[in-house]
Length: 165
Image (spheres, rainbow, N blue to C red):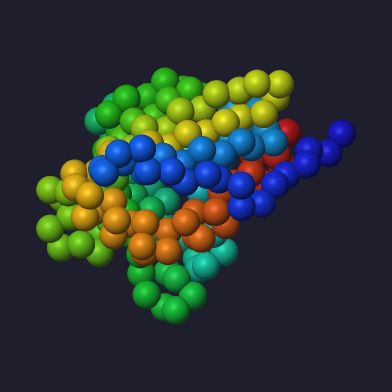
């Protein structure tokens, strides 16, 4: 049976002045979504959302380990993010920091991202709660156009997770 994938179905809400909550269901079991989320070779295939080439996906998936993704966007500019893993429950939970490398003082403004993977009937719901230090930071992210890129990236993530069956 072929899984039916969806497109652009992540829901973005703003629970508080300093939070962004994204929720989406994927047509694949959570161990496959988790694998696509955490495996560098697979991250390179979805993280850009088709808007460029991911030139680096470093993952040291352990508490205290770090991650860093860099892409060269179609416009030729480089976009990088990095962070540190704070809590990991394989296939269920990842808590990490996230810093956008385009902000010079970014190290002091790390967001805390809580990724929760739940499964029902072979489908995975991923919730990503991003805790920011200020409403200004939250609003800057929301107004950056991040949702379009995130939707396209998560569409690719779903297709990759489905292909891993």
